[in-house]
Amino acid sequence: MGMLISIIIPVYNVELDLEKCLESIINQTYKNIEIILIDDGSTDNSGKICDIYAEKDCRIELLKQENSGVCSARNLGISKATGEYVTFVDADDWIEEDYIEIVVKNLQKLKVDIMINHYTRDSAHELQQYKCLIKNTMLVNSEEAIIYMIEGRIVLGVVATFYKKNVIKKIKFDNKLAYGEDILFKYLIFRHAKNNILLLPIRKYHYICRANSAVNSYSVDKKLGALNAIESVMKLETNDKIKKKIFDKMYIPRLIGYSILGIKEKSIGSDKLRGKIKKNILKILFRRKISILLKMKTIIILMPKFINTNCIKFLSILKRLKNE
Image 1 (spheres, rainbow, N blue to C red):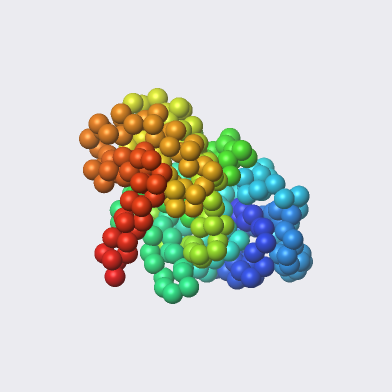
Image 2 (image 1 turned 90 degrees about the horizontal axis):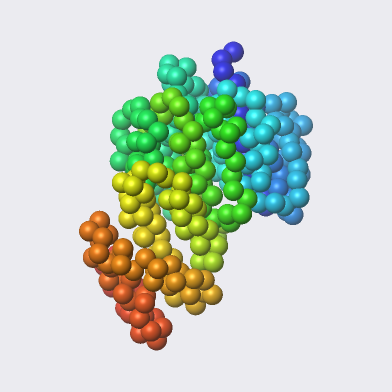
């Protein structure tokens, strides 16, 4: 029969995509799966769709809760999971029919705590493979996995990843983070991994990318959560070299990017972001690992608002002309 795989699916107001997601999972060629659906207080027809599929397939365990957010839903799913490995699928994504079968074959060969795949981005116009530097199957240790995460060489989110049950049961998503919870969770998971981590560059997970999706519609104020998550990671990290790499490669690019977005949106979070930049201004301007472009953008952001607004408009025009 093979090992049991737990698939956790948080559900909130995704009635247009949920059936495709569930069909892709119940029709997997590998059958020994448990599907944990968490209806997080949906107000559309998502709850009814969950009910129908729970009746249709005995492998589905349907849990319902008042709307508490994706972190709470995932934590509930983890607490109920009984499979040897646990994975997450977002309710508006889908997976190819042989995805779990291919993964299980590799998990059975090697004793690993975590397996990380790639994914394919599905947009309205095209399929786009996630740009990743890992081309071949390889084993890495906990510290190497963290470095690859910082460098963007592996998937940063929690999907397209399989977690050993006895590892994931020790970690919880931070309910206080409205955005960026994946960053802190994945860092903690890597730190708790005792055995090797397997990087398997298959692209059987389809990540649906829409202009109006939750991730793309998050305001700058919510994206501050990602910076808070990275700050938490830097506080937890004891290796100074890795801590500096997190600051240079993850923290500063987001801080600058969110600041520019905040100025464009005239967000109330802009002042908080400017405060974070001022606090780190010497590190930003004198760190060799931070690009000249980011340093220039930093100076623009700290200029008086009537100046930086026009400078940012000019940069946007230049970027648009370059892409045409």
